[in-house]
Length: 189
DNA sequence: TGAGTGATTGACT
DNA sequence: GTCAATCACTCAT
Image (cartoon, rainbow, N blue to C red; front, side, top):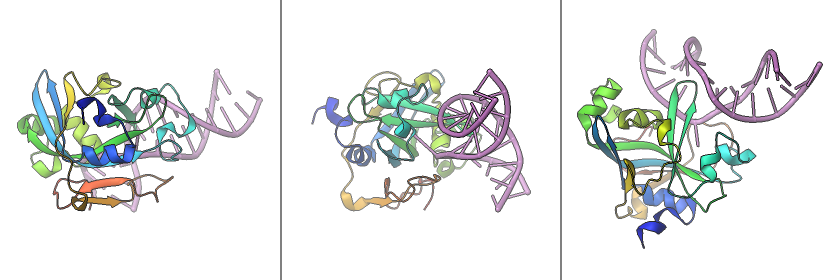
Protein backbone atom coordinates (compact mmCIF):
# COMPACT_ATOMS: atom_id res chain seq x y z
CA UNK A 1 0.00 0.00 0.00
CA UNK A 2 1.29 3.45 -0.83
CA UNK A 3 1.81 6.19 1.70
CA UNK A 4 -1.04 8.07 0.12
CA UNK A 5 -3.57 5.39 0.93
CA UNK A 6 -2.76 4.96 4.60
CA UNK A 7 -5.37 7.47 5.63
CA UNK A 8 -8.14 6.30 3.34
CA UNK A 9 -10.47 3.36 3.84
CA UNK A 10 -12.83 2.65 6.69
CA UNK A 11 -12.22 4.85 9.69
CA UNK A 12 -12.18 1.82 11.98
CA UNK A 13 -9.43 0.11 10.01
CA UNK A 14 -7.44 3.36 9.87
CA UNK A 15 -7.81 3.61 13.64
CA UNK A 16 -6.36 0.12 14.07
CA UNK A 17 -3.54 0.84 11.63
CA UNK A 18 -2.60 3.95 13.59
CA UNK A 19 -1.83 1.78 16.62
CA UNK A 20 1.91 1.12 16.74
CA UNK A 21 2.73 3.99 14.38
CA UNK A 22 4.70 7.04 15.47
CA UNK A 23 3.47 10.60 15.95
CA UNK A 24 6.33 13.06 15.42
CA UNK A 25 6.52 16.78 16.09
CA UNK A 26 9.57 18.86 15.15
CA UNK A 27 8.91 21.98 17.19
CA UNK A 28 11.12 25.02 17.70
CA UNK A 29 11.83 23.72 21.21
CA UNK A 30 12.94 20.32 19.94
CA UNK A 31 11.71 17.05 18.57
CA UNK A 32 9.22 14.84 20.35
CA UNK A 33 7.70 11.58 19.23
CA UNK A 34 5.70 8.69 20.59
CA UNK A 35 4.12 5.39 19.63
CA UNK A 36 0.35 5.56 19.28
CA UNK A 37 -1.08 3.07 21.77
CA UNK A 38 -4.70 4.16 22.13
CA UNK A 39 -7.26 5.66 19.74
CA UNK A 40 -11.00 6.14 19.35
CA UNK A 41 -12.97 6.26 16.09
CA UNK A 42 -15.59 8.94 15.52
CA UNK A 43 -17.89 8.22 12.61
CA UNK A 44 -20.49 9.99 10.54
CA UNK A 45 -23.97 9.39 11.98
CA UNK A 46 -22.33 8.90 15.36
CA UNK A 47 -24.10 10.87 18.11
CA UNK A 48 -20.82 11.29 19.98
CA UNK A 49 -19.04 12.80 17.00
CA UNK A 50 -18.66 16.53 16.53
CA UNK A 51 -19.69 15.96 12.92
CA UNK A 52 -23.04 14.41 13.85
CA UNK A 53 -25.11 17.54 13.33
CA UNK A 54 -23.43 18.52 10.11
CA UNK A 55 -20.60 20.80 9.20
CA UNK A 56 -19.96 23.88 11.33
CA UNK A 57 -17.11 26.31 11.62
CA UNK A 58 -15.66 24.36 14.50
CA UNK A 59 -15.82 20.85 13.08
CA UNK A 60 -15.21 21.78 9.46
CA UNK A 61 -11.71 20.18 9.52
CA UNK A 62 -13.35 16.78 10.11
CA UNK A 63 -14.94 17.06 6.69
CA UNK A 64 -11.66 17.91 5.02
CA UNK A 65 -9.10 15.80 3.26
CA UNK A 66 -8.09 12.54 4.93
CA UNK A 67 -4.70 12.64 6.59
CA UNK A 68 -5.10 16.14 7.99
CA UNK A 69 -5.25 17.13 11.64
CA UNK A 70 -8.32 18.23 13.59
CA UNK A 71 -7.38 19.96 16.84
CA UNK A 72 -10.25 21.16 18.99
CA UNK A 73 -10.58 22.99 22.27
CA UNK A 74 -12.89 21.59 24.94
CA UNK A 75 -13.84 21.91 28.59
CA UNK A 76 -12.48 25.44 28.58
CA UNK A 77 -8.89 24.33 29.02
CA UNK A 78 -7.98 21.30 26.97
CA UNK A 79 -7.07 20.51 23.40
CA UNK A 80 -7.51 17.15 21.71
CA UNK A 81 -5.86 15.88 18.54
CA UNK A 82 -7.64 13.90 15.82
CA UNK A 83 -6.55 12.38 12.53
CA UNK A 84 -9.12 13.06 9.84
CA UNK A 85 -10.08 9.95 7.86
CA UNK A 86 -12.57 9.04 5.21
CA UNK A 87 -13.12 10.76 1.89
CA UNK A 88 -13.50 14.51 1.72
CA UNK A 89 -16.98 15.62 2.70
CA UNK A 90 -17.50 12.77 5.20
CA UNK A 91 -17.00 13.87 8.79
CA UNK A 92 -14.99 11.05 10.30
CA UNK A 93 -11.83 11.11 12.41
CA UNK A 94 -9.71 9.16 14.86
CA UNK A 95 -9.03 10.67 18.27
CA UNK A 96 -5.51 9.94 19.51
CA UNK A 97 -5.93 9.13 23.19
CA UNK A 98 -2.48 7.99 24.34
CA UNK A 99 1.15 7.68 23.28
CA UNK A 100 4.19 5.80 24.51
CA UNK A 101 6.88 8.53 24.72
CA UNK A 102 9.86 7.84 22.46
CA UNK A 103 11.96 10.95 21.76
CA UNK A 104 12.18 14.30 23.51
CA UNK A 105 11.08 12.89 26.84
CA UNK A 106 12.86 15.63 28.78
CA UNK A 107 10.99 18.24 26.74
CA UNK A 108 7.70 16.46 27.42
CA UNK A 109 8.47 16.47 31.13
CA UNK A 110 9.14 20.18 31.00
CA UNK A 111 5.94 20.94 29.10
CA UNK A 112 3.84 18.74 31.32
CA UNK A 113 5.60 19.59 34.60
CA UNK A 114 5.45 15.88 35.22
CA UNK A 115 8.37 13.46 35.70
CA UNK A 116 6.66 10.09 35.46
CA UNK A 117 6.99 8.80 31.90
CA UNK A 118 3.76 6.82 32.09
CA UNK A 119 1.94 10.04 33.07
CA UNK A 120 3.27 12.08 30.14
CA UNK A 121 0.95 11.06 27.29
CA UNK A 122 -1.72 8.80 28.82
CA UNK A 123 -4.68 10.99 27.87
CA UNK A 124 -5.82 12.97 24.84
CA UNK A 125 -5.21 16.42 26.32
CA UNK A 126 -1.98 15.27 28.00
CA UNK A 127 -0.31 14.09 24.81
CA UNK A 128 -1.30 17.29 23.03
CA UNK A 129 0.46 19.25 25.77
CA UNK A 130 3.50 16.96 25.88
CA UNK A 131 3.94 17.06 22.10
CA UNK A 132 3.48 20.82 21.92
CA UNK A 133 0.47 20.53 19.61
CA UNK A 134 -1.82 23.55 19.38
CA UNK A 135 -4.69 24.88 17.35
CA UNK A 136 -2.15 26.18 14.84
CA UNK A 137 -1.88 22.56 13.71
CA UNK A 138 -5.57 22.36 12.89
CA UNK A 139 -6.16 21.24 9.28
CA UNK A 140 -2.43 20.64 8.74
CA UNK A 141 -1.41 17.72 6.51
CA UNK A 142 0.12 14.88 8.54
CA UNK A 143 1.99 13.39 5.60
CA UNK A 144 4.43 16.27 5.62
CA UNK A 145 5.38 19.22 7.78
CA UNK A 146 6.51 19.57 11.38
CA UNK A 147 3.73 17.40 12.74
CA UNK A 148 3.45 14.07 10.99
CA UNK A 149 2.71 10.36 11.23
CA UNK A 150 5.38 7.78 10.57
CA UNK A 151 3.63 4.56 9.61
CA UNK A 152 4.77 1.22 11.01
CA UNK A 153 3.52 -2.27 10.45
CA UNK A 154 0.06 -2.46 12.00
CA UNK A 155 -0.20 -4.66 15.09
CA UNK A 156 -1.65 -8.15 15.00
CA UNK A 157 -5.39 -8.28 15.55
CA UNK A 158 -4.85 -10.24 18.77
CA UNK A 159 -2.76 -7.40 20.20
CA UNK A 160 -5.62 -4.95 19.78
CA UNK A 161 -8.21 -4.60 22.52
CA UNK A 162 -11.59 -3.24 21.39
CA UNK A 163 -13.81 -1.62 24.00
CA UNK A 164 -16.40 1.05 24.45
CA UNK A 165 -15.35 4.68 24.40
CA UNK A 166 -14.59 6.84 27.38
CA UNK A 167 -15.98 10.01 28.84
CA UNK A 168 -18.91 10.57 26.50
CA UNK A 169 -22.65 10.51 27.02
CA UNK A 170 -24.12 9.76 23.62
CA UNK A 171 -23.21 6.73 21.58
CA UNK A 172 -21.12 5.50 24.50
CA UNK A 173 -22.15 1.90 23.91
CA UNK A 174 -20.34 1.66 20.59
CA UNK A 175 -17.09 -0.30 20.75
CA UNK A 176 -14.88 2.13 18.88
CA UNK A 177 -11.94 2.44 21.25
CA UNK A 178 -8.83 0.47 20.40
CA UNK A 179 -5.62 0.03 22.36
CA UNK A 180 -2.56 -2.19 22.46
CA UNK A 181 -2.63 -5.07 24.89
CA UNK A 182 -0.31 -4.71 27.87
CA UNK A 183 0.76 -1.16 27.13
CA UNK A 184 1.42 0.69 30.40
CA UNK A 185 0.78 3.98 28.64
CA UNK A 186 -2.95 3.81 27.91
CA UNK A 187 -5.26 6.32 29.58
CA UNK A 188 -7.43 3.83 31.42
CA UNK A 189 -7.61 0.05 31.85
C1' DT B 1 -15.82 12.83 43.32
C1' DG B 2 -16.15 17.47 41.70
C1' DA B 3 -14.35 22.16 40.36
C1' DG B 4 -12.51 24.70 36.78
C1' DT B 5 -12.99 26.71 32.10
C1' DG B 6 -14.69 28.65 27.53
C1' DA B 7 -16.40 27.47 22.77
C1' DT B 8 -20.50 25.78 20.79
C1' DT B 9 -25.31 24.99 20.32
C1' DG B 10 -30.27 25.17 20.62
C1' DA B 11 -34.24 27.39 22.49
C1' DC B 12 -36.12 31.23 23.27
C1' DT B 13 -37.42 36.66 22.18
C1' DG C 1 -29.96 39.34 19.44
C1' DT C 2 -29.71 36.78 24.52
C1' DC C 3 -29.17 32.91 27.82
C1' DA C 4 -28.40 28.46 29.74
C1' DA C 5 -27.00 23.77 29.06
C1' DT C 6 -23.60 20.87 27.24
C1' DC C 7 -19.02 18.99 26.54
C1' DA C 8 -14.65 13.46 23.06
C1' DC C 9 -10.76 16.30 30.13
C1' DT C 10 -7.47 16.88 33.94
C1' DC C 11 -6.01 17.58 38.46
C1' DA C 12 -6.47 17.98 43.27
C1' DT C 13 -8.95 16.24 46.97
